[in-house]
Amino acid sequence: MKTTTYKIIGSAILLVFIISCGTKIDYDGSGNFEADEVIVSAQQTGEILSFNISEGTRLQEGDTVGDIDIIIPELQKEQTEARIAALKERTTTPAIQVAVAQKQLRVQESRMAQLGRERDRTANLVKADAATQKQLDDINSSIDALEKEMQVTKEQIRLYTYNTHVQNRSVLSEQAPLEVAARQYQQQMDMGKIINPVTGIVLAKYALKGELATIGKPLYKIANVDTIDLKAYITGDKLSSVALGQPVTVRIDEGKKTYRTYPGTIVWIADKSEFTPKTIQTKNERANLVYAIKASVKNDGFLKIGMYGELILDNSAK
Image 1: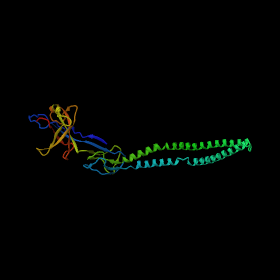
Image 2 (image 1 turned 45 degrees about the vertical axis):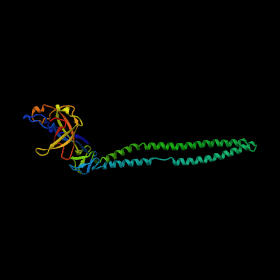
Image 3 (image 1 turned 45 degrees about the horizontal axis):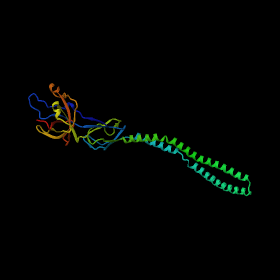
Image 4 (image 1 turned 60 degrees about the vertical axis):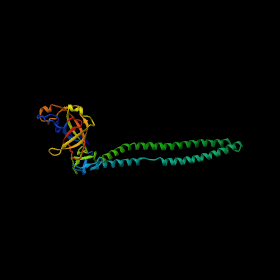
């Protein structure tokens, strides 16, 4: 989208001078009406499948006005999502290995409990001279060996879990960039929708259904003309009578001798002077320095972009 300001400097005419016949002009400035325009451009490349607007159509912000073919990013997204699914198939779980090792550990713990009871009984028999010390030493040796086996089993359980997590992290590390790519393709698909950015009236249509749109190609131009600005010019001696927010009267021709008037408000004052626009006929008038101002006016439908208008300062002495 490209925002431009409709400028028709060539039509802005300053008529605040005393013309050669000595008649005094009854307004303080004149110029042309303008509005902020938005050129809506294609954000995706493809065939325009639908484009349901025409010049003069009133649109609301957020309206969907057309569709551009998005088959290419759609297929790219499907391909990326398939690769993500394939990654998940490559991941493993340590559940089976861990379950086997835990069963082995429970058997070892049961043997350890049995050896402990046998050691206690043999120790009592040794005290009663009913068993030899060697028998007790053999049982203690078996307990030591079993404790080492149990430690190995516990280490195996931790190793199974660690190795699986490492392997899975390596596989899933490829997933994050693929997910980012999938979101990018989705964004490109979303850009296939032509969404109107501002409320306003369609001023010009640059494309038709069936044409090939490319990124950046202008599709239509729209402007909000509910409120419109009169860009007028005043001379330096009137500049001190103008202030931001000041109420003014704006008028346009209505017939040969009558006017249609509107209340307006000063919304902008140029900080630098400029020469009167060249369309002023006499060389003397063109040599005068003037200041541009803008008066905002609520539009009742009669005001058009580029239309000539006149401005009267409400606090000026006529």
